[in-house]
Length: 260
Ligand code: GDP
Ligand code: ZN
Image (cartoon, rainbow, N blue to C red; front, side, top):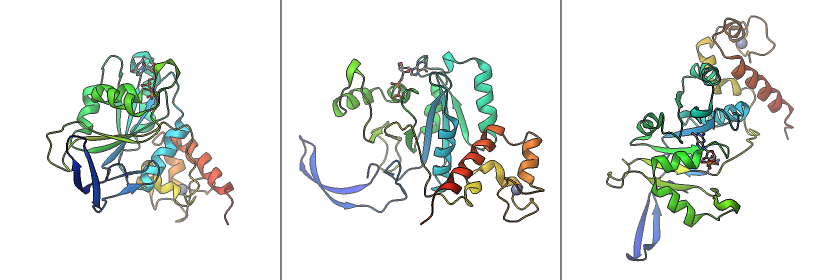
């Protein structure tokens, strides 16, 4: 898997060829995206052009929460966005307890903070296509552009797309296992959480956690039950409507998945 630590035998130093003898034990591994030994995931969305698909963002966050991978959210194309659009997004996601970043890969605004958050960690980058993921990667690691261009198939207009996952080390001099690694994954436009148990979905929403045990029913899923502490928090503005609405839709979707 991309991200594996291995012991290998060097066949030819100049050609950089070798045989893998042993894949060392993995700290963790994800199925989607298929990567190993990850410290965190950074999901990138643009504030505009394209407008963020928040249902997709929430699905990704649920998927990472299920796998216990800490998430960072990066909202790109700040230079194009009107301040209220960014403020609305931040308000919705601040209460999730995730680290939020707003940046413009084009002007470089906010990139320093993004870079600091990645330092010394192994971070998987994910996001739909067109949000500026390659531009961000090239800001963080200018050599990535050359590497991607030779490894990926070129498409018309001379642009390239990531069709596979690649790992880049941002600080070659770091001790093994202590470096800054970025794992770039193919863009995605849909995520189906078919394996998620609908009753466990609520546990993937960190902003519901403070109300755990405060609902009338201990099995409350915070949808149609009376005396629900989460719904009370929602009406008092402590929980974002955007997030709650996505939760309800996702729950309904999981409910309709046929069980065999
Ligand atoms: P990817 O598909 O997510 O890898 O997106 P790209 O990095 O290829 O960027 C898609 C388009 O958005 C390109 O035309 C970029 O020049 C543009 N872009 C990327 N980041 C920014 C940004 O911060 N601001 C603006 N205005 N455009 C950006
Ligand atoms: Zn409840």
